[in-house]
Length: 453
Ligand code: TYD
Ligand code: MG
Image (cartoon, rainbow, N blue to C red; front, side, top):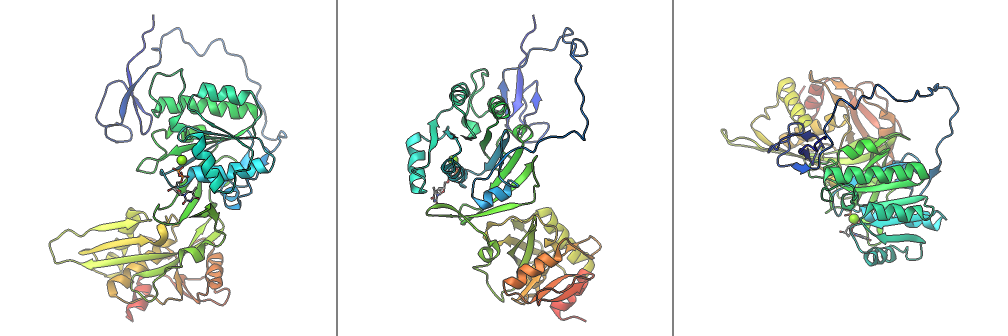
């Protein structure tokens, strides 16, 4: 008889090991291995090369119908999804606890229900009364959303089978449990098994299902990174809890691009849409302060102006300088610092460097290099960058300033918000009344800012 083997599953990345270890060999996280019921041991009888049926293979040029889309009416949400929810698909939405996932989905569910869709909202975290109170506060008390507080996947599927649903929310997948699996709710095997059943329901029945997932401290969707492979769309809901703005970003999308974002602001009446994010991120900007630079970031086809802030502190020799970054990649900051030191002769090696992207925004656009460099030069030399200038461009290790995509879009957005100078890669053209200064090398920017010839 085949004997079930003891196995340990990493709760962070899902990798399996047959003995307990303090550190996962695959993702290097500590104390993430948990014993879970193993699969039946492999035996020679299981020969997959025999007994199958031949598949009918198809061609690429055959006609296929586009899946049906459902717009929830929250334009920023629909935009991040690439044009609404797709019937028969699964979407995973991840984010820190308290960021507003339940609020956003309740708002979407309410809108869809009011538009005549059949909507089911299952909460595994809150009692139905709590969800109802929130819905009333959001002005959705009269929306015909079918609501239940449940965690058993078997019960949920039985409920869903007894009615037709167009849109189903599972809040959250970590609280769900399948009675086919022995492990506790929240473990990788539970989450994976529960998600699999719920996704199968969506694919078979044609509903759009949304799974809410909590995120671990390193930003991956809790434990079950495995879930990201199982669903069609992965959205990340980001922001600082202490700030109002929230950004909904598509990380994976089988039905659309992953470069569009939705911007929201958390207010008294839930999440409001922000259709002009630039003005939002620049409201508290400190003008004519050394170290502050405005950068026109591009999110998909949408420019968003954000403030890059740098602070440098010269240390007495000997101490190890600190480098701290919020909202940008620390590896890229190290690169920009190295280029400033090696190619432009700025002795920043001994200074402490702090970099912050204002408003809790996370920059991923490579064109931020030049803006960060300008902020660092400005902080280090205590010379402010003109308040009416925006700065962008990618840097190479040799100190060249590289062209970036859509300079026209970036400049036009800046012009709209009253900026009149653009500092960027050589060869770009001024638009919308902005006068541009192009730099071929980072050294030229340093010379301009420090007044060197
Ligand atoms: P919630 O949607 O419960 O977060 P998550 O599901 O991601 O854990 O949002 C919780 C926070 O949002 C909570 O701190 C209160 C705040 N909030 C508002 O500021 N205004 C509102 O109208 C609502 C409903 C919540
Ligand atoms: Mg919640």
